[in-house]
Image 1 (cartoon, rainbow, N blue to C red):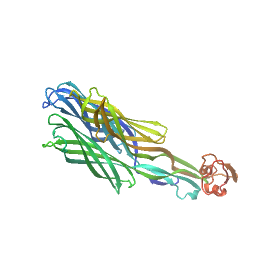
Image 2: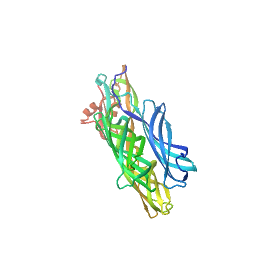
Image 3: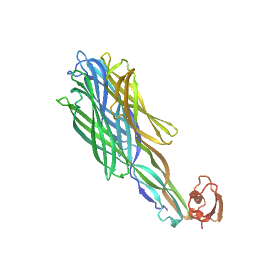
Image 4: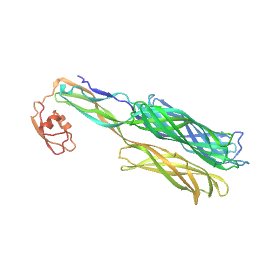
Length: 507
């Protein structure tokens, strides 16, 4: 007959996909009639917005748009001009285990952008993207935690406790942010806003009751042309705070919240000193919780033969998580000596991991662009790849996911031999150790076939092997741990290797 088992329902999510998808988008564009002809292209920057995420059977698709801001010198006119090129994109990945019930966290970023002039009225724009994708599936079903009334059939059970890190909740919240910001009095008035860049960072997140409270700030950097044609930059810090509903997570949970733009609008006021900022934002939260997991891992009977069915159960343990800030300082060689830096920014490119023993090294390639005025008075941009490195002490077998961002402005100053740049790269990491443990899933007992122990000696003298458990010895001789402990005056079930044990026959 099939024995009844005690079961505990599992809740939460399991990771079914974690990857980064690269994508290239190109577009030809005619220069609008209101804009002058292109003499020379100086720089191209890209800002990405996440539109939506679609989960299909076996596939995930991410939709968004990139606004490429092309800066160029006009033919026959003075001063820098801009050309904005909106570029929608769709990228995706096929993966087994992805269903319509899954939840997706997607984080797109621009890794590089460039523009080529086909003629004075036509350009070809190319933007490279990297989209970090994590897919979480809800966990259904339960695990066996024990046999009710085991003594009735001489059933012996081994229930083991595991410390488990569970993804308790994956949630998102769209919200809007708007503000009017005023240019500092030390800055010249804006004649034209050429472009703006956003860096969003969530600095604090905590679960209180059923609410996730998170706070952060938007770093906004504006590049503009002042009266007389000079290029200037201005930086603004815009704080935000939000509350999100979460379910199934305790107040001691660890929370990782990524905030991304879904739309961005920055309009220059008529006074030349006011900017109206309107942002659509999306917060994506992954909440993890430490839980104790009791699992029935083995069972036998001293009276009857048992038929045991097992299944694998994955247990994750959180080894480390957090954010490390790495300061990067580098001198970029430029073709012509720089007199003045007009603008500087960094796009995070390829992120790689390498390991030596327990040391994990994460390397992020930052594509740093500097727009500068040469000694001859020519405006020129140079892009160089600079590496930022973060080292973590993690045991072998640990799996580490990491998101790299450049949250603050890039500081750049002319120096002998080029331009010195200083900037910060944040490494937001989560390190997990996963193991598969065998648990009992079903149990059958044949009451018509009692165990025959007539040929078994009444007592056996046996040496304990290295790493051998008292449970395994008791199971091998169809007796109990308690009987062996009593016969050998043992106070607990820990027995050192090499010790001789008296193993009594079960009566």
